[in-house]
Length: 251
Length: 104
Image (cartoon, rainbow over all chains, first blue to last red; front, side):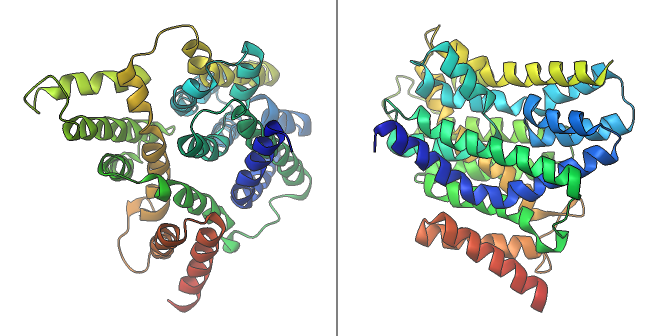
């Protein structure tokens, strides 16, 4: 098997556990979209045009409330803002690709494609054909999102909520994040982001997620600086102003 | 606004956000400090997704034993720690959740 195919199929395989949670989610979206008064075609096309679960759910809700188009667009932008973090996080690994490749991979860059891909890159580093991993993961998710949307449109949600299949998503993320927690800065980044997320979860439009992630990134970066004594600045306290600047750029 | 216009523009906005840094990174020099900081995106983002799913029940933080998702999540964290295997972790977490819901 070529390196391209190997990476591609590894990406496909990495996506399978996430599908347990994504598939019922897609069906619920399809059912809700029809219920909110969207046409069959519009409901289905939103899954390929916007291709982002949270944004689609909120859009559906806003269409039901007959919100103005501009409000819907603004909401989509804010809800998907977290993807800018993913874009920045994967960008170093994709820097050498052609614009066409970058465009295709950016289109496929959802939460569920980002997670296994970045974990893959953290483990393997940048390899010549690593982007085929993202392609495999992204396409697998895309195809299943389209199919589950269609099933939801025509059959309704169908899978009983009591099966708790949605729980498979956080479980998969747990399986991915635990092996990354190799040193104290990483653990501190994870715990601080998690705790902030609990306090910030009342913020609308997934903004809590962004705030929490930024706090985690800042905490991790500061701790890493403190641990490496090769810094020119002798005092630990003075390192904090520089420490916060890079993560501000991320936002 | 026409729904199709909303969907097309919404798609373009989403794409522009996802494309932003991937597009820009090849064009400019990126400071090392930023590159280093980006390594903390995965643990920070994933935890920020996981924590509310486990701890929040009925809109508040629930630390009680009745919070089955928290208990099942702890089982999954242990499974992930010791096995480093995704399928075992999911299986352990889902089974734990079903058992807790059934017996507690």
